Length: 490
Length: 109
Image (tube, rainbow over all chains, first blue to last red; front, side, top):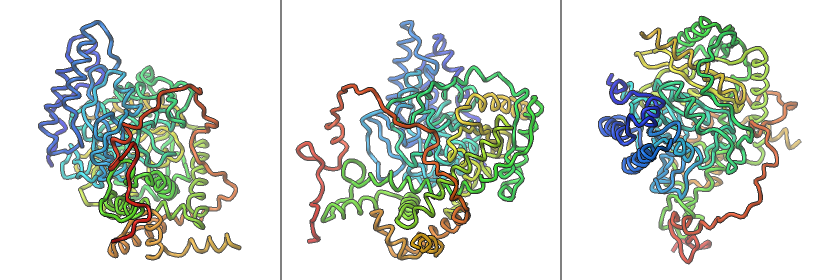
């Protein structure tokens, strides 16, 4: 196993920002150190579709000039951030790792991108993903897979595999990803970093290229829990350009980092831990989940198992709802206004069909067809309509569990990082998302925190789930787990 | 009894013809080999979804959206929204400030 996670810059985002704001370290030097790490190891990892070296150096010089002039460039001053390549960046190619959008340069920035820049962070590149965020391994990228920095023969997870790998490999202390069914949390778990899916509506989706609009959410990847809290606080909050953005002010999470878990009620989700579904999970993953629960109990929390029965229907409901919404969202790619156009067709309809056929990869086509079928006359009620009712059942079950528990706990992924090609059957790949999907269907926040190692010494992530807008509780629990994991590794 | 007919139809396995029809609706062209592969794969996913199909949820209301927001309005303020040039810059083909496409009713030569 070859790994490169121990090399390169290891300072946290908050350490870097403190030094840059105090004038002790220049942002240009910070960016150069990360670009050097990228130059050395990116050929082996392939985390990026585009490295924005020149733009990053220019932005860093600007931060340094502002510090020299006595200004405060913000809480993330001078910190490199990697951006999943499904977030629009003004004048910088944004491809969704699809041939369909190869070469397209958006004329505007996504709100989340604007906000990290406003906080002083420096965009250092656009990261690889499964095409249009559809997948759990980045093997569906039209530009080649990303490798896991812990084991270059294993997948980094997906769909935000490039963002997770960039953070794990020391290419950037911060990254943004998007999570529709686990696409932040699962790669975070497989790459040994922290990944947060915020509550639906907590972070603006303006400028995030749509996959499944009622499920998509942007969130942070970092190496420390404190950095995740700081990045979430920087990007969350209302945005008038996203009509699904929650108007009420978001609670800051940074002040809760040291709250501890004394008296907190933690429920381990039975269905994802001891039930039939979990019998297929790797034993080391379940053992680390148990160890995480024990660590929380040792820190003063009360821990029990709790049943959330309808979580077992989450996977089926998700693979009806997400493709249905995707089939509608991806109807816009027709070769007329932007994106790939296939030449030579005799008429407009033929051009559209030829362009879509050439521009989309197999997984995207599979999901478009599944969604088109699930929405077609005669099947809508039985599939899409029913899946939306299952969504209500899941929300009701979570509400019942949260009457007795403050947060819930489960494994993030059934397994650690797996070899390339190991899950070539689509349904087998979809089963990866079984523990992460329920949060997306409910709209609730959830986080994956590294906790020990599993098979072949590869990282394990445990997932904490909380009710709507309780990100602060996720952060306080995660901080305790981070400490416990470091102590047991020492 | 149209509903019953439809529900029983759902339980029938997905056919190759269904996939060909759906591909046409989605404006995708599939090779014979792709049709075979996709039919098997999509049928497997729909088979897995039978656990949802079998649930009695008639009394449960659907969730369209996880956070109840209604009537989302912004202030009615005049803004400059002239992005025609920027939008056309990204087009595969443009002419006279408009998107250009092949003839709508063009036929194969």
